[in-house]
Length: 321
Image (tube, rainbow, N blue to C red; front, side, top):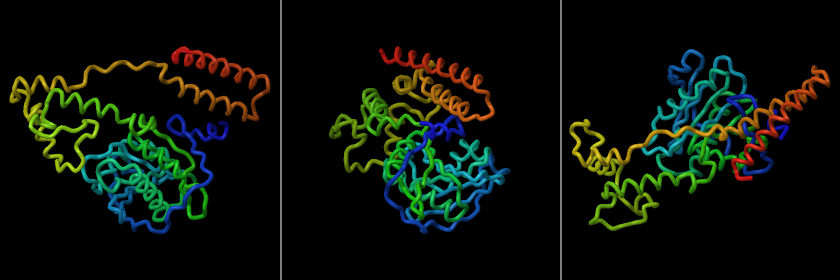
């Protein structure tokens, strides 16, 4: 716990991945890089590089002018429903530009194709790390960041325990802002909910005269339905591509039924684990501060311990303990 929390440095906290043994990954195969236009959010402070991996994935990297020596390897959310392009990762770089602003190098893969494929995305993300290391700079430390679906990808990547060419750990830590770390099947339950509600209201995927299939499949195995076909059926039901006054009364009702309701305020108790982590971090800093007087150190630690105990009680009550 001490080594983990001592590594807290950026965006609240880094969850360190303890890796000891694991498979090596082919080195020296990263594609040549070209400079490319950076998103405007980092254009003045960084140089961006791009390449297309032999797998078909597009790679995008940014290295700040004032690089701190550390690298963030990003795994994006989704999975995407459209084929990747050379610009796919630029929106993510813009969104998480604060990493580059704080001196971190940044690299990501578009993933080689659209659709679900965790193991595929794991390989593509590792290729992105290799690309930065082999074609741009050698980082001091490497942090894996997975967002949404990318958190699921990142969790699997950590399990794989990739190694550098010298046998050392490829990743020094990981951060996942993702509910999908609960597990692939559980994480996609909400999609099934949406799928069932859609069929209840629209009844056209499948239509009454088409073969039925379990809705948890999304579509039947071997289906030749394209995204344009699905869009046409959704539009038929809801008229979502039409101006509001061009929709039929039934389409308006269907669209209203399928729209999200008002957001429900979150419970502050959901933040308890983060507050505990931050307090543990502060406690370690105080314990390691050689400049603090013993009495002052003891008093500060006691204050933190009291806060932690209070949070433990709140968490126990929330969980029915």
